[in-house]
Amino acid sequence: MMTSVRGPAPRYNIGLVAWELTGAIQAGGVGDVNRDLAINLRARGHKTYCFLPDHANVKVEGRRDALGYDLWAMVGSERLHSKISRASLPGSGIPVFLIGSHEGLFNQKIYWNGEENVKRYIFASKIVPAAVRELQKGGELPPLDILHFHDSPFAFSPAYIRLTPGEGEYFRETALVGTIHNGGIGYQGEADLSLYSMTGLPAEMRYMLECDGEMRLIKGLSFCEMLNTVSCQYVRELQMPKFGRPLVEWYQLLAGRGQLIGIPNGVSGWDPKQDEGIVNLRSESDEDIIAYKAANKARLQEQVGLPVRPDVPLFSIVSRLAPQKFGLLMWQHDGMKTLLEHLIANTSMQMVVLSQAQKGVTAEEYYEKELKFLAERYRGRFAFVNRFAPEKEKRIYHCGADFFLMASEFEPCGLGQLYAMRYGTPPAVVPVGGLFDTVTRERGFVAKGPFTGDVAEIAKEAVATFDNKPWLLQMTKADLAYDSSWGPSMEKYEAMYARASELKRQRADF
Image 1: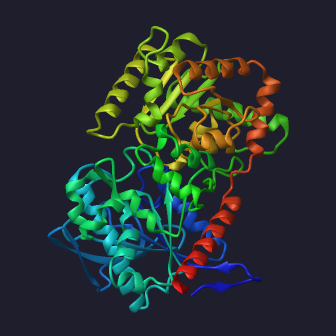
Image 2 (image 1 turned 90 degrees about the horizontal axis):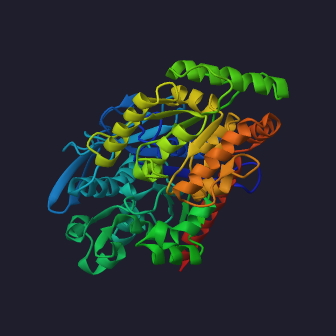
Image 3 (image 1 turned 90 degrees about the vertical axis):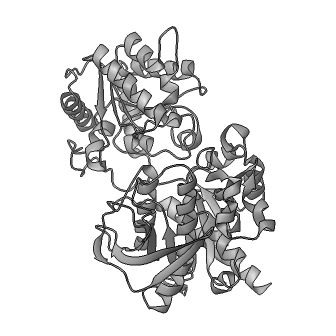
């Protein structure tokens, strides 16, 4: 299984189990991270194999449908059928095994709530170990050293493997690892406790997945040898009621025994000297940096219909309209209906927002309506680009702005600020999660706290800094020099895999 190249450093066969994977299908930044993790592990000599639900509209290369394995899983009283297809992640050659559902469980949108969502999470979590067994028997997959699960959709799988007779023995030499991209309320795999019978586990094991009178599927990750979340600060925050409730004690237990650690996400690409869709940076000279930022600012202003004015600061926001990301900007502030309107009306800034609401999500549709209203009321000052954009189209929003605003209530890692810094755009952020870990006063603006007044203060500070061109240039250069590559994080993932493998060997010997 595990091999060694260039000395003692181990190289692993790794199965990455994810609900979204950019290049195949994406709902947000988690898809970017899953893709980058697979690609960067492969580049470092590991063999990576991805497992992904066969969602509607999934895009892959070299697809071979129905490899011949008929797989079944009991979910409650239903016997559900799956077939596995093999393909590769576009542009990478990395194998992707697609988990099909004869009953059409993956034919709707990627995420939703309710009993059907729990049903498909449990179904997919049970099919993965069955698929691994059959693919290995058929020679499609080598023995795995690591099986790495991402977030609550597959969190039940480790519990199922370890608690089901026969499964634990088959995976005796495979270390289980989990990544919690978001562990707060709404992301814990919450479900009515009456749905526990869907799992097929003994009634006396219910407490393993229960908390606060509900089932929390994310607790299935307890059965992994090692867990990580996506920033060091977020490990600390999950142990606080504001961020980790009602699982605070569980997070404290995991962190206290060294089972839960923080590994920040990195960024692949986003190169100011090579990327398409922007005016490229020619060199690190002051003159070229100033010209590069000015050209991209003018391009963005023209593209979104704002007056091309080099003399006013331009802020951008690229975000989902989820309350955690956008709610603070929609709060009342200083007599105005929203903080966002206050910023536009009471400073000299221009602002552009790139986002789109999820259909049927009330809060997001309300935010979208407010943004459209602001775009009409402050025409020439505020632009709302109401759509979801792929990476190539988003680049100019991170590159062309003078400042990039992230007023998140919580942000486990955050990628937007990393993309902005790659392009030399100082972020203005609330001090939570990965924003706390990556943005300093040398590279951006950090609010004192998570309140509207704190965000208004850093926005005004940024507007004032816009007129201090020497200091703004220093911030831009500090952002361009910041190393947000995957290299340091890859070393930490490899160390976590090594630790998980050692723990697994110790338990097997015992």
